[in-house]
Image (cartoon, rainbow, N blue to C red):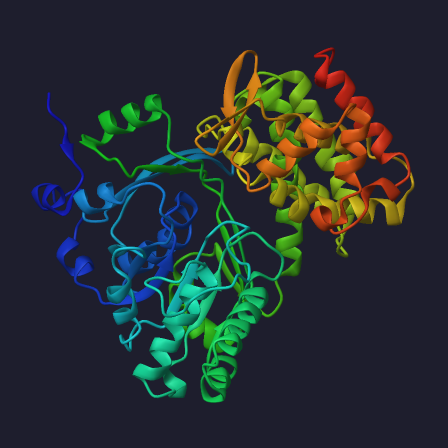
Length: 496
C-alpha cells in the first residue's frame, strides 16, 4: 500500500487530522528562527503551534537554515509541516500522542536566500528572534556584514537588526525580543555583547547602537526537553503505520517540557504564546532553572555518554537498563554533581530534580543516541562540567572519582584513529565512529605527540586555554584521570 507524504494537500484531504488548517496556514509571520534542529522544532515551535491552535499568538515562523550542512528538501516537499510524537510517562500515566505542527511558514537557506531573509526585517509584525546554533555558535569572529550572508550567527543577526533599524528609521516600536536557546550560561547577555561588538567593529553608528541597547531585549533562556536526533527506522515505521502517512521531518520527544526565559512584562506581552502552556516560564531571574538543568541533566549526559558508548551501549535508555552504567549515571549525578552545583541550591531541590531526570532517562519511548550527545564534546564538557568540578574542590579536596572516570572516558573517546575528508573518527570494538567536535584536531595532535598516557593527561588537563583553568592544580584529579585512562585503554574495566 502506498503511504502518502505529509503535506497541506494531504491534510486538506483528511480534515479530521487538522481542523482549521487554512486559517492557521494564513497566519502572519511573527518570528524569525535561526536553526532547523529537532530541539527548536520540539520546544519553541511546539509552544507556538499550541498557542496558534488556541487562538492566542496567531503567528508563524520563518526558519533560517544557517549552516551549509544537510538539506532543506524535506521542508520544501512537506511545505514545512511536520509531526511530533510525544511519548513518555507523566504523573504515572503513559502518554503517546502525535501533534501535527504548522507553525513554520518558510524555510530559507542563509546561503541561497539572504536577500529574502533581510526582507523579513521589514515586516512590522516580526518582533521575535529565536536561535539554536549549538554552544559554539555564539562566538565573536571577524566577519563581513555585507556578505550574503555573514559567516557567523552573531554576524547574521547584526546584519538583520541593522536592516530592521534602517527600514523603520530606528523607531522604538521596531525593536525586537531576541531569545537564544544555546546551552551556555547567559546566552542572551553574551549574544548582546557580541552584536554590539560587531556593530562597533563595522562602524554602524551610534544611533544604531543606541537602538540596539534601548529598544531590543536579549533574553537569557534555558530549554529543557529531551528531543533526540532523527528517530530510528523502527520508530518511524511504527508512527507512520499509526498515522497513515509518511513524514521525513518526524521528531519524537519526551512529555516533559520547559522553556525558561528571563524577561519583564514587555517580553511577556511579545511572547504571548507563553500563555498556552505552563512549560514556558518568563521570570526576571532563571538562574536556578539553568543551573539544575545544565549541571544535572546535561552535565550527566556529557560525563556518561563517552563512558557508556565505549562500554558498547548506543542509547541513554540502554545505559539506564544496564545495571553498571545505570549505577554510574545515578551516582555521578546525585553524589558528585548535585552537591557541587556552582549556585546556591537547596540540596533537597537538587536531589528532587536529579531523581526526575533519572526517570526521564528511563523513558522507554525515547532512543537518545549517545553518539549524538558527544557532538561538540569538548565545548560541552567545559561549559557543563568544569565549573562544577572547580566548585567541588572549593567545597572539598576529595577527588570526585566518578567524575574522573567520566573525564577519562572523554579523553579516550577523543582518540582519533583515522582522518578522512576532514573528519576524524575513533574506534570501538573494531568499528569506527565519528568525532564531531571542533577540538578533534587538537586531540589528534595531543594523542600523537604524547609518549605516555600520563603525559597526555598532564598536557590536556594543564591547558587553561582549553578549560579556563589548570586542572592539574586540583589535588589528586589528574592522577585519578590517568589511572582510569590506563584501565579503559587496556579494556580491563569500564565501570567497576
